[in-house]
Image (cartoon, rainbow, N blue to C red; front, top):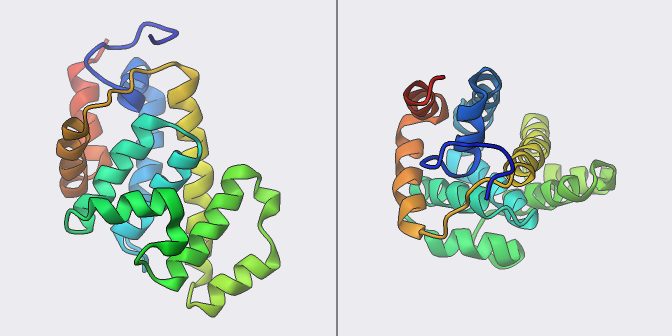
Length: 188
């Protein structure tokens, strides 16, 4: 049960964003740049970082939706997404992404836990400074998004089909386009 009146038909962050569209737009613009914008990391890799951080924060809506978006970008590979959530060290992903997930996991706990050795390990596996920057910012941003979703007590359905369908849509159309649609339909 949400702590404030949020639209019943918009779960998770969508309800919170519809409640206050003027803050939703910059939050969506940030996630669009980080997860959909030009990058040497694939969209699937960036979504895996967001999914991993959200799963560590135990935010069901966020790790479910971003896991579904990641899977959509990865040819429907839900097993890989699940493996990243449970133990990315055993997942069939690049050593570079594993090093970036190590950094992201430390940022999720406390940014000060990231060490020079962590950054050097990522570089050793081919990570650029921009990729390291973006992994840190994705992790930090998703800690904020997760706390936003959980702090308002948003509705977080268990229906995997709902996440799968929405995940394909966001993967195809992007965050800004999809969010403008529900923001317009719930304008006050």
